[in-house]
Image (tube, one colour):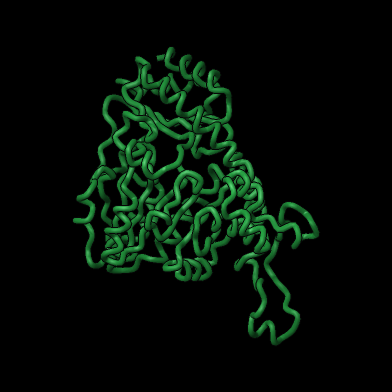
Length: 390
């Protein structure tokens, strides 16, 4: 992107940014979208250039114009020094963990973390000699007491996976840096449109691009964005592991990002309307959505976040396994499936038995909803029919 256009976008609105970031028509014969480059071998003009590697692209695992276009767009949104692109959202968690944790280190992980992230820490990092300690997402100011001299890494998720607890990210990052720990945050729920972790002292911002940036439930991809302090070590770890993203997926995510703000506006509005409706329903014990005023984390969300997405949970009052099955099986517009962030609505019965510190919500079974782009009235009608089945 030329410097004039880059400077003009700096103060532009989010929809304008998303429409133009990662697009350099002047470099590609006027074509608006960057081409999809499929590459392994890259040729050098002569022996001297090959020996010095003094050219921008040297091998497929080290980037292409397609991956660079997406990475640069994400850097602009995140305010990061650099971004790596990896084959999945889980890889976006595990690669920085490998980059900054070593044998003998102590690592803190919030107990409301994404389940597969926990599995990697428990199965892989502990085998490599890393001590893992989980902490209650509602710990508050006592968090600083958990930090040790050998705490090298902290992994946060805000809001918490499935149960949506809010964290005081800025305070935790500040405390963690007192012992030199690298702070990472899974920011998939909010996207950089609603929360920018690096502005709150976080060193590493993690995203499952599978979700809202992709937006169409047809790809799997992840990104990791780092500040100046951590960028080189993160980049080197990716290169050492040889884990990279493919051009077709990067192209699809970049295309999805063009409409991400427009889609998120609808996701947010519909999700809040449905969440409010559920609050008054006789079959609902509690709704877990950080943007609801009655939620314990509302004040933190209001202070630090500029919006909310389409994912939240509720507690199905006094429901047994049979009733949970009846509720989910009666849904017609809500599909039963994992992931979220696409155009379609999804429902899922949540299992929190893997947690070691945080308590599961009481009063019934936890149901997670992904509110898609369907008309809100139709989704409410679908939920009402499902409630009728129990």
